[in-house]
Length: 113
Image (tube, rainbow, N blue to C red; front, side, top):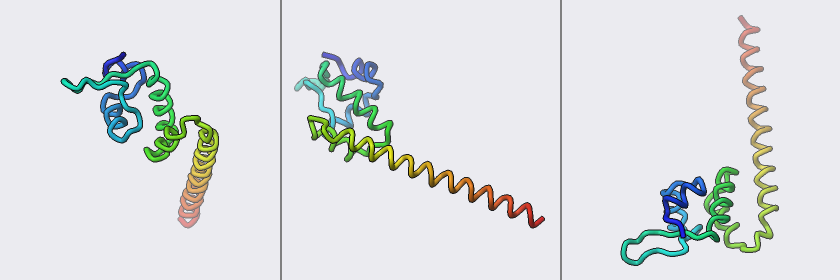
């Protein structure tokens, strides 16, 4: 069993994030001491914590992360990742278009000088 600080160091998630994930029922500690309220995590929590960290870096919302965690078989994870990737690619294309429009606008301003 790992204390929250040890588990945070192992997973790269902050203690605050771990507390929040427990509060919203995303990743609950394996054990919470009823007297001092210390949180303890086990090896089984490790994979889930790493997965949550990855999903967060991929831009998943808390609700999307909950949907992944509720599907314990992770059967739909690949589909969710493909959808997320497609959304990111669309945003990249939109940003490229905006950059192009800005460049054209700047050039048109110089042409009028």
